[in-house]
Length: 54
Image 1: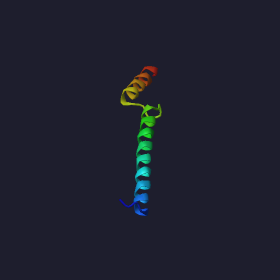
Image 2: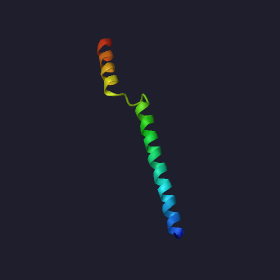
Image 3: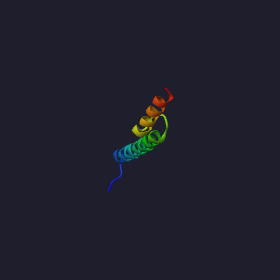
Image 4: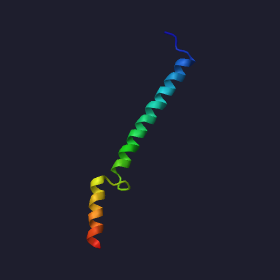
């Protein structure tokens, strides 16, 4: 099998795409685990706390 420059470009593109997908998955997990974006359960608890403080 011949290994020419088009195979090299294809291999590099594949590695870049895999790296981007892994980064997006890790970033998504990091965002979901942060407190900046509370889940609906936390939101309901904070609403109850706000109502109790009135």
